[in-house]
Amino acid sequence: MAKNKENTSSDLYVKKDADLSEKKDKKEKKSEKKQPNKVAKWFKDLKIEFKKVVWPTKKTVINNTGIVLAVVAASAILVGLLDTGFLGLMRLIYGQG
Image (cartoon, rainbow, N blue to C red; front, side, top):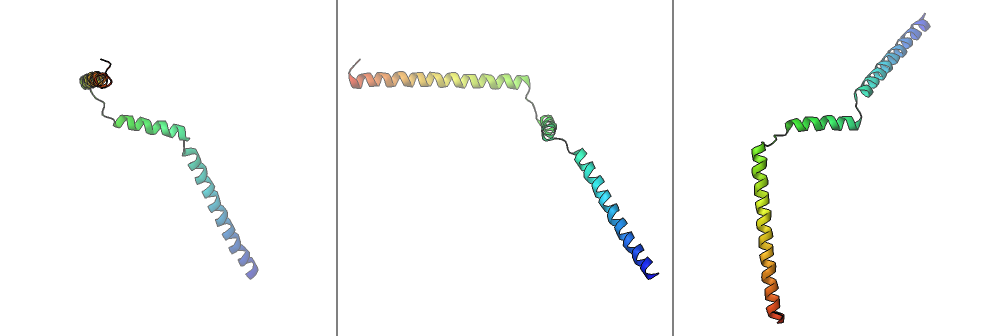
């Protein structure tokens, strides 16, 4: 009878181990299904980030565009004047004017 008790207790351990491994397998399968591919996750995160952005109003965009164009025009005029001035200076130095 002692032999039967040993077999029974070892059978219980085997069953418990089998149950645990089955549970682990089920968890792994669930976790594999839940993980989206990287591209889908990237687009999902991108959508979330776009919702956080505070977009400027149309008036703000127009004002900022005007400022940028004015600064570009002023810089172009300044560079043109400097170029003309240095050209005149070079002509005086080399005597071609």
